[in-house]
Image (cartoon, rainbow, N blue to C red; front, side, top):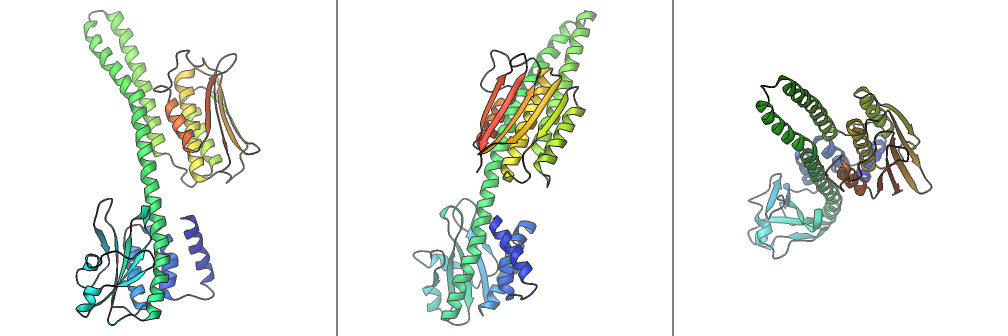
Length: 363
């Protein structure tokens, strides 16, 4: 995907001196237009230019229809574009094939295979007024190769985004279950108990104060979960995002935070930066929520073959019966670390406090 976009920008720069034919320019600009606009509009704008370049009557794309069988048509086609049902085997990527059934009826329909995601085929269907010549077939193969690269890259990008979204939703669901749902259940029990002690003003006051404290903590956790779910780099560097996060937690707690970030700028891939930011934020949320710490130190530094991150506090430390998952967001931090092949260690500190340490190798 990045290579396609870089190629687009390079060609745009070169085109100021010598503009290529309109269809080639449109093909080269297609990755950027798909990224900016999405949908089918960039493809619909491209198809008439391809038909004009090949001296064809019409052009259309037949793309796989979602995850099931069938086709999704983009653009207009002569007849019902039923050529795919006329051939015993669809043409492979870059192979041009004339529909024999259409030829018998005096129609010249050329099918050209395109690359697509996970081994699924896509087709570029061209309608000609007469039998296409050698130059048209050669040019069609070149167009199909370029167009197939773009479609394959964007299909792969959508697949990765769906996988990341599914993983994020799973982590959010577990965090809601482990924190918010459990505390709501506790509040329900306490509210039922409150009714039985309303005649005892002292016990009722104690219970009401407990309910207020729990609700305040629950409200804070919900805000943190919403903030985490919406979190993106949003064009910021990792340094800027970390500084903003530390300032955010400092405003909402009495802890004193220190940040020592020695990672060079642009040294991490974008997906690693976001996971590192999320892990640091989760560690800080745990400190504010559970540790009763006064001092919190955040350090990030490069090593000979990788990177390390540490969040250390001087709070009450971890309980001796800490479960492997289910509390303090530990399972979520471990999953995030695993996503970038990092090693994560969460352990008590001599003299009190907790240390979250992560290290991983350069890609």
